[in-house]
Length: 153
Image 1 (spheres, rainbow, N blue to C red):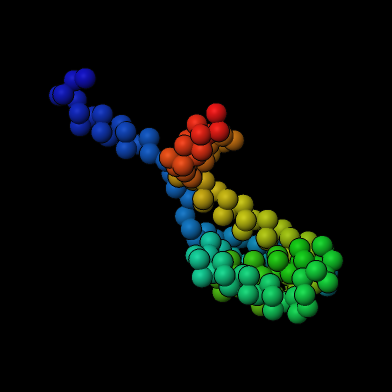
Image 2: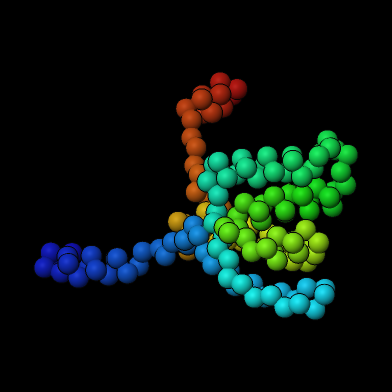
């Protein structure tokens, strides 16, 4: 190591930092309704915090209106997508509110996009290891597990 070049090494390391994905992004939507009307809007998508995630669950229950088991798998998927998109999209335009309830192509495309953003956001701190299936942001170890293993032998 050359102590005279520490400043140069620090600058080099700073440029190698992982670029984090922002929690809020702008989506540019272009949609042609079944009526032939064309809509173009920029909407903000924000990954919800803990309260927002609970809001999705509460909205699922409200939209279901019946016990979950009474709904078809497709109805469950639609309701979950509606609740998810309604929380992720900040200041949802009126046309989006209308057509996600009627057009499943729009609904599921939007849900896929906001969930892709969430996945990228949660994995962005991992940098290049995010593509490694073995990599994880969570690691847990306990002395109990090793004690239990040795006592069985």
